[in-house]
Amino acid sequence: MSEESHLPNEIARIARILADPMRLQLLTIIARMREIPCMHLVDHADVGASTVSYHVKLLTEAGLVTVAIDGRLRYVRFEREALRHFTELLAASDYPDTSHRALQALPRIRASADEEPQASSAAQGRQ
Image 1: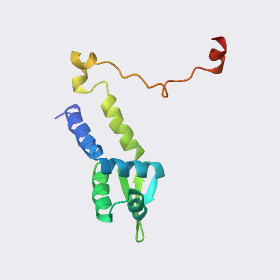
Image 2: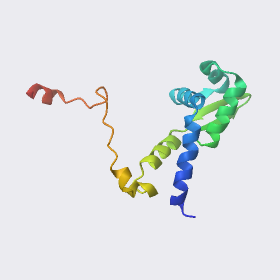
Image 3: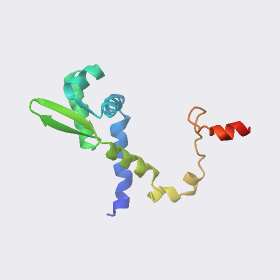
Image 4: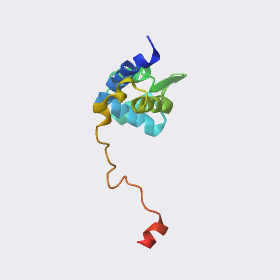
């Protein structure tokens, strides 16, 4: 089986992990802090330690976070490259189904007004 045939399974596996609201909340907290002690993650997420432990385990298995042990403390570290890899898989031009005409015909989503790039001050002066 080629690596290309594994792409849909890999994308679906990580998407399932990210689809859970609690895991997404935990990953967001971890990403903002870059690294956080597990006990602080429990406080920030306002859930029990066993819930955090379960979801961190799944995030770790997906490669989105790593856990480092320092004495009695466990630190959860955000793995930016793993998330970047996931988004690259989604956008890959060689993804097996992207050559399908129906997918190519889908409209592109435009950026919202607050996401649109601002014109330079020189360009604004000419208007």
